[in-house]
Amino acid sequence: MSAEPLKIRMEAKNLDFYYGIKKALNKVNIACYENRVTAIIGPSGCGKSTFIRTLNRMNDVIPGTRVEGAIFLDEKNIRDPDVDVVELRRRVGMVFQKPNPFPKSIYDNIAYGLRINGMRDKRKLEEVVERSLRGAALWEEVKDRLDENAFALSGGQQQRLCIARALAVEPEVILFDEPCSAIDPIATAKVEDLIENLKKRYTVIIVTHNMQQAARVSDFTAFMMLGELIEFDVTDKIFTNPANKLTEDYITGRFG
Amino acid sequence: MKQAARKKVVQFFGFFLLRACLYLVLAVLLLFLYDIGKKGGGAISWEFLSQAPRRGMTEGGIFPAIFGTFLVTLLTAILAVPLGMCSAIYLNEYARQGRLTRLIRLSIRNLSGVPSIVYGLFGVILFVNILRFGTSVLSAGLTLGLMTLPWTITASEEALKTVPNSYREGALALGATKWQSIRTNVLPYAVPGMLTGTVLGLARAAGETAPILFTGAAFFLPYLPKSLGDQFMALPYHLYIMATQHHQIQQVRPIAYGTALVLIVLVLGMNMTAVIIRYRLRRKQR
Image 1 (cartoon, helix red, strand yellow):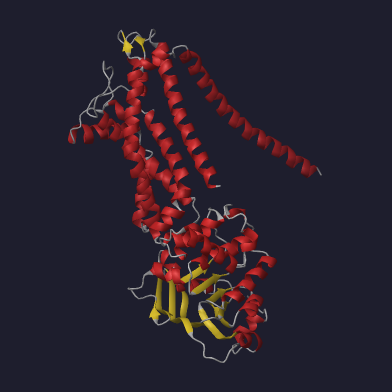
Image 2 (cartoon, rainbow over the protein chains, first blue to last red):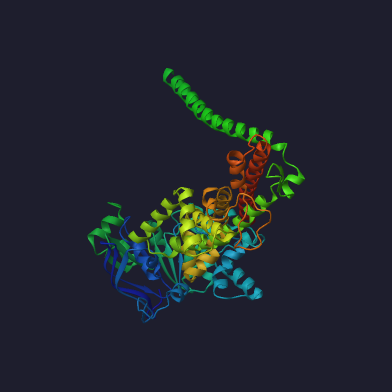
């Protein structure tokens, strides 16, 4: 890691989250640095997916949920009433757990985000589609069949398509919600390489239940349990010399 | 081994029973169609389809009834299709899912089970008397429209529910507004199902007698309806008269069967259209 000071891009401060009366997040504080990969690990139901979905306010669409605390993107609290959630989601992209290509052609999938923002210029669209697919290391595999339905792709290809689709709208932060849990090991390796590459241009935050994956791809790791942040530190430190007993028990496989 | 053999026998009888049930239903249905086809087929001719009844409805054709049914079904569609689809979109996509929404949904489900004669009486009170539309194409079309609405809404909502949530979330996560996500990523995949349900509802409306009985259908008219304020003849009502109310009931029996056949073919045709629309749209998406 370079010596220059790291810039915090996104930060949750004292974040509480409720599903109805059930509290899912309790006073969570996590800072995510620019051009770094931050991994969120923890046992099932610890609130890691809930946490990542608050960062682009995807939880807003679930009825009966409530958030307290602050989430900063740069210096702006994204929960302020004057924040345009549509614009926020363009700036903070998301890749979901299960690949969710739309039942359209590969080309139309990638162009979707641009078209809903009013882009009509065909040349520009083609350019962005190619750049995004290259960015997601999928171009060589699909360049001759952009008209084909995205469902014809394999699971791993579909997930990279979803990454390309997210890249096309040029976000600043990309959220990965367990992106490899539904794809095979070879495809997983490709997505991991990709994440490694993406951090050169983006701030990356990844939720994973795979500790090896967190160790491989991330620079910082947050360990969560039962809705609380247990430990947050440089990944090497978390995996070699954790400060908290619970973290140690989890990464050594004593529970989880 | 004995155990395995027994399981096979049980399975054989299980399948046999299920298959027998299906064949029984099919047989009844085919017998019914065959009977109407045989007795009504002889009456069908170009004259029968294109001319008005003559000589106290003992001769001639049923064109006014076909025309009337077509007209009133069209009016039903104009009312029930857009209103039903839009209500379903609101109910499924926008409305906050709470107790009130559940109550509304339950009421709609119940309305689709209300007997059609009740709609007929309601139509008389509301459209014919209170709104003073008289017994007319308009009153009958509105009554049938009301009757079809719960069907259209329910079918459309079911179609919307089959669109995976990941399409909606995926679009929102790319910076789409809610409406953009619905218009570009939900409706295109729901519309085939919505249309199918809607056309099935319309086909049912086209065959209904009770709702139009008091609201606009006429026993016999020497002319076609010229405006929405006129009365009209309709296939189901014509059939009812020919089968039960005519003074020379033996003599007009072939006409009654012919009318029944035309009505069945019409409804079947509409249902087939629904199937074809769905097939076409589905294939276009692949």
